[in-house]
Length: 85
Image 1 (cartoon, rainbow, N blue to C red):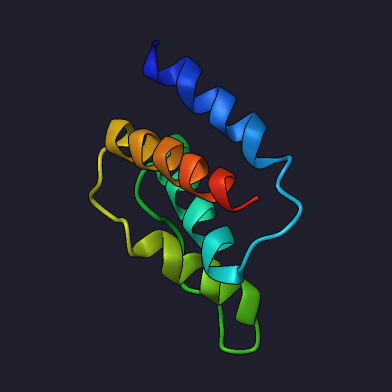
Image 2: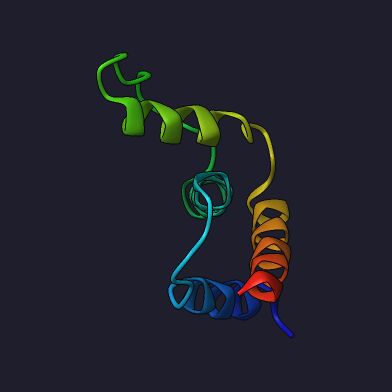
């Protein structure tokens, strides 16, 4: 299967997950952002924006990973999380 199509199917599947830890959600978020937007941009949110800061830090943790690798990791993460649900 084509990676882009597999990625889009994984994105659709991830939207059906009703539960998940914050770590699971951040993993999907950072890999999705890396796959779609590339490396993190902008400045890090301030300390009073805890959610924004956690998301920015998660995305920054995958800086340098290619979009294709991020797509593959996202698909794998969805498969692993799907087994939990």
